[in-house]
Amino acid sequence: MTTPAVPLHGIEPEKLALASGNGPAERLIRLAYRAGVPGPAFTPFRKAPKPRLRAVVASPLAGNPDAGAAVRDGHLPVDGQAVSLEVVDFGAPLSPPLAHAVHGFGWLRDLAADPAPVAERARAAEHVLARWLNAHPKPDKSRAWDVGIAGQRLLAWLVHAPLILSGSATVRTRTLAAIGDTARWLDRNVAAAPGGLDEITGWCAIVAAGLLLPGGKPRRLFGEAGLVRALGDFVGEDGGVLSRSPLDQIATIERLVELIACYRAVRRDPPPAMEAMLHLLVPPLLSLLHADSALGNWQGAGALSAARIEALVAASGVRARALINPAPWGYQRVAARAGVLLVDAAPPPLARHAHHGCASTLAFEFSYGDHRLVVNCGGAASAGGAIPPEFEQALRATAAHSTLVLGDANSTAVLPGGKLGAGVDAVELDRRMIEPGGGRLATRIEASHDGYAARYGLIHQRVLTLRDDGRELCGEDGLVPAGRKRRDAAVTVAIRFHLGRGIEPELTDKGAVLPLPDGSRWRFVADSGELSVEESLWTDGEGSVHPVRQLVIGGMAPRDGRCFSWRLAME
Image 1: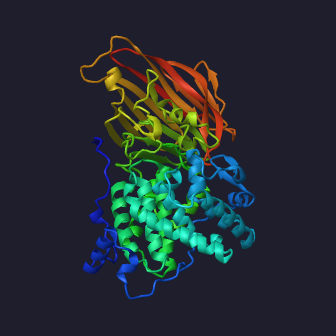
Image 2: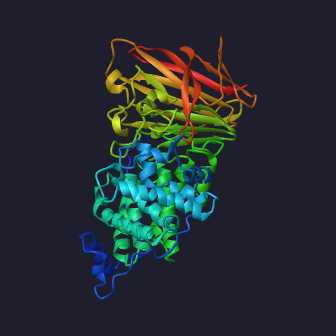
Image 3: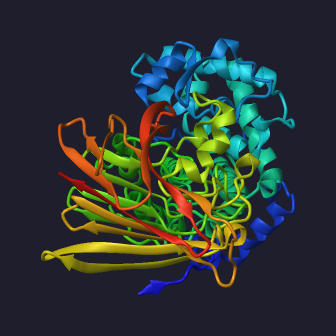
């Protein structure tokens, strides 16, 4: 059955009910707090509480012990490189990955996992915090005070408070004052967030502060309502975030896991909406895992390891299976024994949701067992770390993905700042089981997009058929005229297949042989066009880049279109 593309949209906030705080009194408190009435005004006859934290949070999210040891030694791992903290100017403009790492204090989670004595870890944390507070004694206009980064920082301070509150009374007083100041700043500025993950992070931090700081009930009620609304705006009905980014999906799960841990710390049940949202968010993430349980390279992400994904899912407490067809999120997953096919079968994210938006429509990845045969380059989100910033737009381009490129152009315009412009508006999709012959079944995905229609008057149609034993993947890439539009001249076509790490293709007169590291061999055959081998790159989950190869079927498409057929099979 053919399913036409539909616009991505979120869950209606009304469908996410709060467990408590919906009575008339609570609604009045939220309204008053949102209007600027300070928390102490709700209890005018009580003595103002001293600054302190009400509980110690036990986060189920495990950090990286090696990264924590590096931080203790004065080095911050940032997307494939180690940055010396002593040479970082905390008050100067920093690259986006470094700014998030330094100002967001996410490294506290890694430091908490370091097996070194607590006193050593606390000294390292307090040293960095003191330098940061000296550079930012009050809110300013730097990236450190973007709502998403400020929210991440406050949440990290609250969850890992023992590491930053173990020093002298002077240090504790200064740190608690910074926590209170940041919470009040977020109260006033969270509405200015651009939406999406940044807004969700800000609201999570507000709720956490309402739970862990004395007299925080008004702030908690205010934050819970804002968080439910933000989640409803950013998460689709199938649980996929509207940025279509697996990194945003992971970060949203992490924020909720840590926030729920804050509820547990004060012996309070979280609103059912938050736990329900966790159960909604996990299955779409699992739909982007390969046969080795590690993540594919989509919308700027690198190939995050299976261990990290497994740890995240365990921390969430959600037991679920991957979604096979998360329609609004737009990724298709076909598992055929040891073979896994992942396909981007939806328009790119809207500009307001995109952070590292990629022109990847109809790209695919394919793995068999522990080996990735066809991949996407990935890594745009890591640009500014080990990846030079000037590579960012190239990694978001259509050519950095395993799909057809027409006229050396992107199927959707790639704009600065992670945004996307005009291009793919609609994707038609049909998925079904077929029996192509020989008594074997296969899954057939047929999809098309209109990203090249306006410029070249052609529609890209892609058919991918994976045999049920996972040992054969057949493809057809067709270009057909879009309505009455025609081009007078032919246009260049390049169908790119970026190969997995460790695969050195051997061209033959019938195609190419792909020897895998385990000694097995696959054969790639193209029925038309000229097959060549070019250099490429692939980004791992740590933001490190690895040289790989790519197969390219080249040719020309006349004004009435053309079809290219190919086949990838185990020998």
